[in-house]
Amino acid sequence: MENLCCVQDKGRYVYGVSAGDKEVRLGAIGIGGSEVYTIPYGNISAIVHDCSTEPYQSTDNEMVRNWVSTHQSVLDAAGKQFSVVIPLGFDTILEPRDDATSPDQVVRDWLRQDYTRLREVMRKIEGKDEYAVQVSYDPGLIVRQISEQSEEIRKIKEEMAAKSPGTAYMYRQKLERVLKAETERLADEWFKDFYGRIKKHTDDIVVEKTKKMNNGQVMLLNLSCLAAREKVDSLGKELEEINNTDGFSVHFSGPWPPYSFVAKPAVTIKGE
Amino acid sequence: MQPTRDTHATLVDLLDRVLEKGLVLNADLIINVAGIPLLGVNLRACLAGIETMLKYGIWQDWDEAQRAIAAREREQRRVEEKTNAPELEPEQYSLSSPDSKIAEKYSSKEEVKILDER
Image 1 (cartoon, one colour):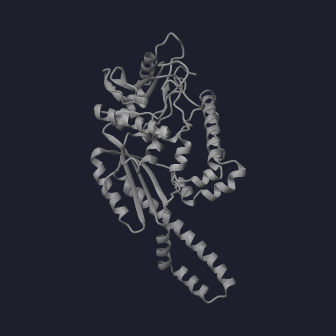
Image 2 (cartoon, each protein chain N blue to C red; image 1 turned 120 degrees about the vertical axis):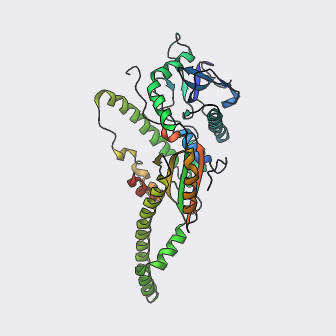
Image 3 (cartoon, each protein chain N blue to C red; image 1 turned 180 degrees about the horizontal axis):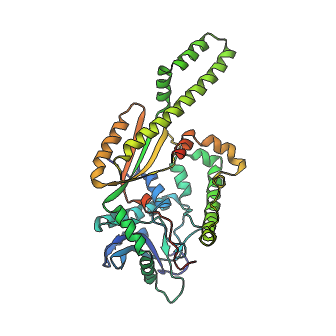
């Protein structure tokens, strides 16, 4: 990365931490074609490449996208090689704070100091993967269903038809209020129902913020699920059922490294 | 139903995770830029289908606000370690007042409800 200033090769970009006590070379599969290898401490190893002590930054979307995909593909490769891998987020770079310490030593020191926590996280995630699950609904269809089923709405509509345009406007507003309240009430119910059904097939679950969707659908549920490999089939079946329910659709992606289940607050080393 | 790893269909899932999650290291050890990845924010904005927000300039404001909060939080955390100072109040997470109208327009009711469930 000749465009980056600062000290070349003094940084260690960390992709993750795996079980394993040997220095393993994974090849030139890293960001920018860099050599990825492991730095072991005891029976755990950091998966790294050598880099400068500048973070990877760019406003070029394509470049960032490539970096992020490469970060993921290194973790995918590591996942095939090691029994368990704790994923780190993008752009985690360790650097020595003084000239006396080598970059590799900094990594080993970190593994040593964080050892207990890292082993604990490994125990939690071993044999499990993360899945992203999003359930959304078609608001148009839901409104039609509510309109057909609700006695209150049928009445408002009947009355509205017989009124002058001015008065009808007020009825329309009332109708909208009722529809909105009913949709909200139902969304609450759906949330609880789907959440409960999905949770059964997972080992841990994180409720993420819902997002605005650009296809007219409304996202009801955005979950990160940690699931043991043998549970994935039953999770898939449950999601299939939800997906087959009129007006609902499910997005189901994975397996991902358990990014959402390793982010405990950092412990304080050296007592700041 | 089988989970997918199709690159196109899962790009947002990937970015959500790689850019925002993963094991957190002690700040003493790592190089960082104000504590949060500032990369790819625009990329995420485009992919999430919120070009409209960009048009209104809201995303940039939001991003800046988030960074300021992250920096403050980090500061706070340092202080807490010594003094057990109280946590940041939730309202500090909201957008600044000039944006609140636009923010209201773009935040769905469902979001609020789901947060309540947590």
